[in-house]
Length: 59
Image (tube, rainbow, N blue to C red):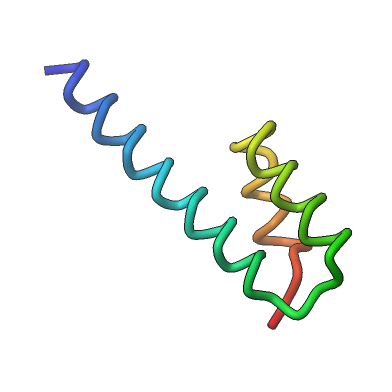
């Protein structure tokens, strides 16, 4: 039972990170800022997502 729950939570987390990357790419931020945010989200998913939610590019 534990491995199924972990797999489901991992899938949900992956979807959230992909959503954040798409929102970053669609934002009006400059190209350098977009690339930096996407790299942060890819290399530091937990901390990156929290930082993105607090400080990330706005519409």
